[in-house]
Structure formats: structure tokens, C-alpha cells
Length: 336
Ligand code: FAQ
Image (cartoon, rainbow, N blue to C red):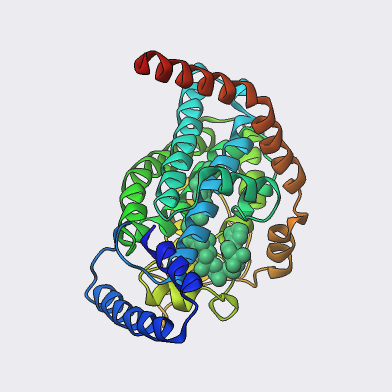
């Protein structure tokens, strides 16, 4: 990419004169880049961008892609046990969508000059993160509805603003992803509503239990509090993030309280109450030690999730080899 070409030039150049010229040029490019950001313009893959902007995007987009791919696992666990054909078809479609989202996002990250193999390697070796939420187990069928309602609900709240992210390939990918996430959220809510309105007492209790287990991890999905979020200020300055972690968390909680009331479930937070002055809900203390432990690799299912991804990669080696052999054969045929 252009940015990398410039770096190479810098390393090869060696003499001070060339370095000074380069840095003046770089300052000019950076000023122009900042002006584009200030004007709300989109940045395309071929445009000049500061190295830190590129790295920040690769970090966020690849983590986002990994989250979609790892996020298929907790739900995949229930495809074979869905209670009806209709629910099974919906869950299959949802999990397939997530695979597709991962692919759009890997492709968006590739436009920044990082290969899919590099990103997958970073995931498999534990260097890359993925969303904390997918390190929790799915214990009952009600978890499927609750993931749709709360996890996809939180994902939409976070991701709709990314449709206006300053990096155009990411923003474009997010538009389609958000449309599909919206279906995901609705199907989850509808599945829970069915159980809460027509279900047995045991089914209603199963829904409440799932909500109790998923509520706090969903609230944590938005990331650490703003004063402990090292990336937020710069990402907001660059228009990668449009709202801070705490702002989005608050919006999610405010939107979800009414949905919980209609559903007839209790959110497991005794301190959750409307604050007239703030025109927002107050909520209880979040256990940030749990969040840091989970993203540090020690959540309930971290090892299992990573192992499942590594196994899938290794088991799929023959498919990649066969595809390469086929492509080579086609190429040789064409050449002949
Ligand atoms: N989990 O400075 P910040 C989905 C890390 S997709 C793990 O605030 P930033 C669809 C963060 O990376 C869900 N790590 O970071 C679906 C950083 O570490 P690093 C994924 C987290 O980037 C639904 C450190 O903490 N969505 O759900 C988390 O400015 C159902 C400090 O944090 C996205 O990825 C976390 N929750 O803000 C699929 C959306 N939070 O990288 C299946 C795009 C923070 O310096 C079923 N990403 N960290 O080593 C974002 O919006 C941002 O990256 C944030 C974090 C908001 C997640």
C-alpha cells in the first residue's frame, strides 16, 4: 500500500536530507488527511493515511471479524437441538450471516495491507482479541433468544455509528452487516416473547435465567469505561468511533429497559432506575475485574473457543489445498 511504500522509502533513504524532505511531505499529507477528517470526508484504501490510523483500523476491524467468526460457535452449539424446524432454519441463517460478516470484515481489513493469513494467525496464536461476550457458555435454548436480543442488540448499538466510520471500506461493510444484525435482534426478541407469552412456567424461568447470565456480559461488550479506554480519544478524533464506550453503553441500557418490561423479564440489576435529571437510567457497578479476566484469556470458554477455531483451520487444510490445486490446474489449462 502507499503508506507502506513510503515507510520503505524512509528506511532505504538513509541520508538526512531525504528524511527531512520526507517528513515535510509527510506533514503536508497529514494536514490534508486531518482536513479531510474534519470535513467528514471518507478515506479510501488508496488514499494516504497516517500509519497509526491504519494500524488502529486493522486492529479494530480484524478483532471485529474474529468476533463474528468466534461468535458462530456458541450458537452453532444449538443448531442440532433447535426445538422446531422454523427455529432451526432461522438459527442456521443467522450463523451463516455471521460467517459472512466475518468475511466482509476480513476483506475490509485486507484493503489496509494486512493479509487474511496474518489475521487468522494472530487469532490462533492468541495475539488478537475477539469480543469478550463469546467466551460465555450457551446452556439452554433460551440463550439463543437472549443472544439475539441482548448481544445483537448491543452489537447494533455499537455498529450503526460505524456505518459512518471515516474509513469507507469498513463503513460500507457495516451497512449490510447492520441490516442483518437487525434481523438477528428481532428474531431473538421474538423467540423470547413466544416463550414468555405462550410458554410453560419452566420455559419462562429458563428465559429469566438466560437474561440473568447474559445481561452483565452484554453491558461489558461496549468496552472499558471511557477513563480506562486507551484507544477511544484518538479513534473518536479520527471518526473511527463516533460515540464513546460509556455513551453507547448508556444508550443500550436505556433502550433495553422498556423491551425487558414488555417481555416480562427482570434485568438483574437492583440499582437500575430512571434518573429524571439525567433523562437516562442509573445502573449498578460493573464488575470490571471479570471483563479484564475474560479478555485476558481466562473466561469460562476462552480455551474451548480458540481450540475450536484452530481445529477448524487444521481440519480444513485439505479444502484449501484442493482449492489451490484446482486453481493451479485451471491456470495451466488456460496457459496451454
Ligand atoms: N471484548 O480502548 P478500548 C457481534 C479491548 S460483533 C474484547 O476501549 P477500542 C456480532 C480493546 O480491543 C462484537 N476486547 O478499545 C455477533 C482494547 O484492546 P487492544 C464485536 C475488548 O477498540 C452477535 C482494550 O480492550 N464488535 O457481537 C472489548 O477503542 C451475536 C481497551 O479498549 C466489534 O468489534 C470486548 N468487549 O474499543 C456475532 C465492534 N472491549 O485492542 C455473533 C467494533 C474492549 O488495544 C452473535 N469494535 N476491548 O489490545 C469496536 O467498536 C471497538 O473496538 C470496541 C473497543 C468498542 C469493542
